[in-house]
Image (cartoon, rainbow, N blue to C red):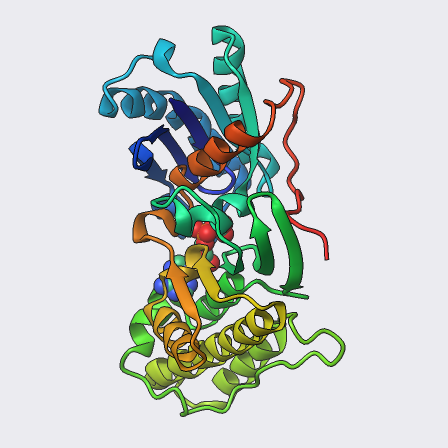
Length: 335
Ligand code: KG4
Ligand code: ZN
């Protein structure tokens, strides 16, 4: 029985997992979202996030135990996200999990949040096959060559804004509620993706890296040029979204082919986007490649994915020292 805590940004989350005979079983997975609180500020306010984590963590752990019909004494391993993320937010979850491990004399594992996203498409299988992982979240856009669990190399990343960050910033330019991603996707459904010719960044010496800041500036100029941008919301959203998706799909396919991977995974908050899922699946189909999507409940930040990464860690390596601290800039893989 492994209990994991995720608190790297604005979701407090707790999950309990065990390896059953047919693979990992998620016995409970709870998320206490703070989105409604941060929406008022147009983005995440770290001090507010940290206070809310501190208030919510204990009741959430107790609820997760109740849902799984377990007592604290029945948990064998504790885990928490140790980075990357907001320092003050990470501290709450990590300190709480280490406290439980120390008090009960049980092992502790510190987990990389991005590894949680990366492995999330395989939770039901419990095994990690070689694949190309595309992780698209609010803070990261990564293309990772995965040979096996723990064997990751970085193929591409964003050189400026992350894909989710670009969605959120364009959402703010269009006066949409935070976070912009889901709002833009909704509006884009009735828009024309060819209405505005927004750029697709090509980086000469880094064919698998992404850049979304030029796109963001183009959208801004287009908004300023239009007399009534609010009358063109759907077309602006559809055209912006098409540009982001085009870059993500084209580069993922090329990277998979270059590294000889048959499977491409899509994970992270932006992986909720249905249009991105459809475009990636269609393009992969044409090349005879497979797409593995992340189950919806594991797509935006959650502790289920941290619990799964910790379960694999507990089967492969010794526990972490209780002196292990947070690392807000923790990286997942080297080039
Ligand atoms: O993985 P996540 O929950 O948190 C981070 O680790 O960053 O990702 C959050 C990001 C936000 O930028 C949000 O706008 C974006 O995921 N997002 C979406 C959609 N749903 C969430 N972006 C585009 N389309 C969506 N449907
Ligand atoms: Zn995340």
